[in-house]
Length: 122
Image 1 (cartoon, rainbow, N blue to C red):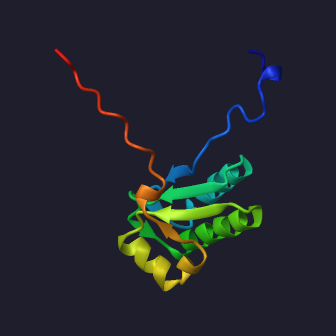
Image 2: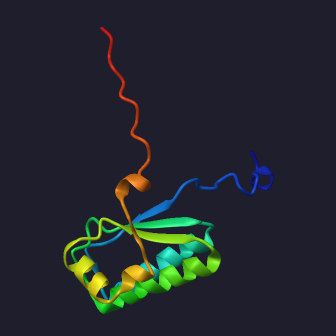
């Protein structure tokens, strides 16, 4: 199949796009994460989830980056949610009132269906 005969939606991703957060989200890496998430939105994501399971520390700069992504998603008519936000990152996010801009979702809402279990017949 040549590149010119591939339909435009051939590589379309169905369902939410999920990205994993690093251990820290602060002024030194917040802007990079923001750019990556904005690229996903520009790439056609209509539902974007940031899995914060590994995230253990976040500053106000990290909160700002996530709110900026939420604003861009809203402008494009897309959704942006957080998942598994806990500990200190949850506390600062809550203290900043950022949940009003970036809602949290549960993992089951975006996780793919489990793979079927294959049994071996002897």
